[in-house]
Image 1 (cartoon, rainbow, N blue to C red):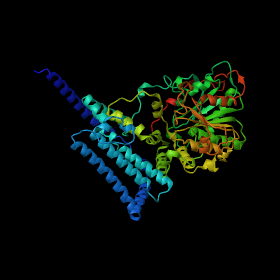
Image 2 (cartoon, one colour):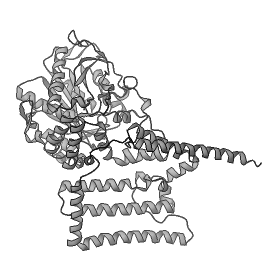
Image 3 (cartoon, rainbow, N blue to C red):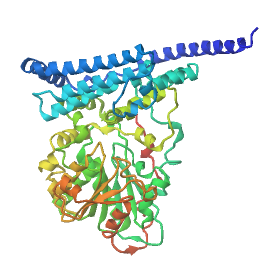
Image 4 (cartoon, helix red, strand yellow):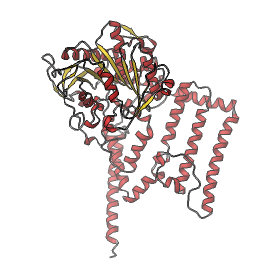
Length: 597
């Protein structure tokens, strides 16, 4: 017996064991896919009208301007042939190296082999050449309006991104090297990750982005000290324990978006905006929205205003014994807060002293990148789906947001999990991101139709709660924080809404970074700066040109703005009162409720 035989026997045994696992996992995979529920076809992608119009535009272009089409094709053929010839020359010279590669940096192709290995480099360069040709051809289409053009470019890019060679085992050097290093174990582990994700999502392929066992809300997330002092069918009201012997007289009531859960503002003590607000001497109440099931199908925007915003403001006034509160709204809750303020103005109610908006869109004439999902084909499909189910399932929105950054939030994680066999990371922000909520059917349709499509609030035609509301009816002092690279709420569109408010006092702050990181930006990190401009808010480009940049977080600047509108120092209010007994400790019960879809 040679010394290598024991190793060979071990390798053979391991291979047989892996083959058995692959067979078992394959059976589980088939069984998992069989559980996939039938979904409305309109939710699977853009409608046939878009593809029909794009196809017609291309056909018309071919007939009316054949030289343009031929020029595009000749350019593509020429690049392909030159690339092939360059590779052949290197091979004939006996040099196994890649030809000259001047392609721009791309995070998908960071492995040096994409640059130096002739096989991987050829595949990469040919892909990038094809991708550019497709992009140029779609951008050159004529006969489409601006929205159709934007959608054609977006969905064609989705197809191009999907076919990146990095997304396939045979053309991904990282995945192949990992498979060799682990003697195929990484592929078996990847298959197990794939089966697990499909089983967990009833046959749907949704990549798990985070180790879900690493976090528990109330234990290592959302740990700021507070108590639930009110509950109705729409929300739980959390009153946070004050710090210090005195607080500002005017309390804050903070409304987070109800498409996610409030603890994005209380992930951990080091980056908790909730903790920071309390430490600045404010009395803070936070709304924790219910995660609705089908029984909420008839809940609309008016319900969120009446039973949510107005009720929370009223309860805070009762508990603290004050006549006014300062209100804060984040994202969709910011838009609804603006509607609530307009309603209060119509009713002559002065309950809100000032309002702060985080990454809020109130004029929807520019819906930004999300606009590609707001065509009638998508919205009609969603309306059919939610009418049938009673809710807009959380996966619809989360998947839409993910496809806005598909390389980072879909393909990259899929490569690491399924091709590299890596376990998902323990990352609190990604855990929160996956802990999304459903939307009531009526509310979802009203928001998409009335605001996103028809822009009724900015047009002054929004009829709700017995009044016709306009963006101009927002007249309290406002402070708005937008984020420079926000892909959900474009900062220029946010500023355009603020510009139309009827308020005499308007402050606009532009934070660096995106929709979440720009808001959850504690001063201690000294990571992202912000811009301010004391001049009148008129035009976004002019505002930015005249803005002053400041190092560090915007939180202290906002804190000073808020303190100036929060009255004198007084002894802190007790937690709850006789009419508002403590129901449970923060973070409450609604935050941990996940109804079946």
